[in-house]
Amino acid sequence: MPSSRPDLAQDFLQKLKTVQGIVWDLDNTLYRIEDAVKHAFHIAIARAALEAGVPLELDEAVKAAEKSYAEYGYSGRIFVRDHGVDDVWLHHRFHDHLDETMIDKNAETAEFFRQTELRHALITHSSGPWARKVLSHLGLREWFADDHILALEDYAFQKKAESAAPFMLALERLQLDAGQTLFVEDTPRNLSIPHRLGMGTVLVHYGQPPRDMPAFIDADYNNALDLLRHIVQQKNGRQIL
Image 1 (cartoon, rainbow, N blue to C red):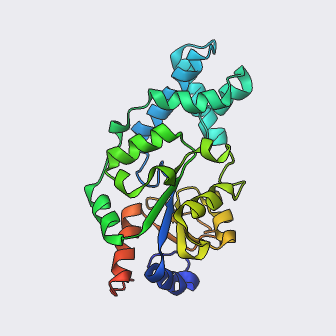
Image 2 (image 1 turned 180 degrees about the vertical axis):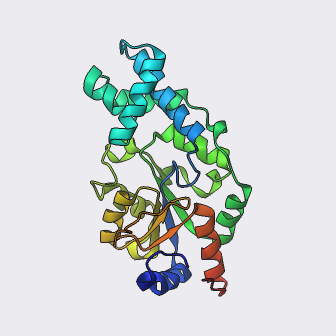
């Protein structure tokens, strides 16, 4: 069953047969952020903060980044708040300290992208250059036109949990109505607004779904590949439970 909410399962199965486009989140959705990758993000933020003049040693800055992530969900917030680092500069700069080849990739995911024959767009809180590098590394770049890759700077730094702007822009670029699309994301709160807009909402959770699944989440899957595989099965008339 694709959902932890059986009352929505049949409606969602029908939607999978007719969906025409998917809007994806990037980090921890199209690939999993393993502990080593998460640590690399903290180190990258810390290195950028030191470049900006934050008066800490690297190990202290890394610990501050970890604390910031635990408290706010963003490793850089503490440097912006407590040290006056420019948040836009930090957003762009810290991605330059990351190596996309550290990310595990799965060739099967690209094959199922091909089989779905859908339109795809991306909205991410990461920077545009990082998003393009990661998509290329994952072997998925060919399914995302340049103007379908929407980074935080492309929608005026409006967060997905707070604004409909990222979703409206993605739908405009896909030339699809909300009801013809899915939005796939690993952070539950970011699925509330697309649900309100009429998009199908899918949570990716790697086997750790929320104890109380929010009503604005239509379905949940372990990973992106499981969703893609299920879409292909539905479009081919093969149902799974």
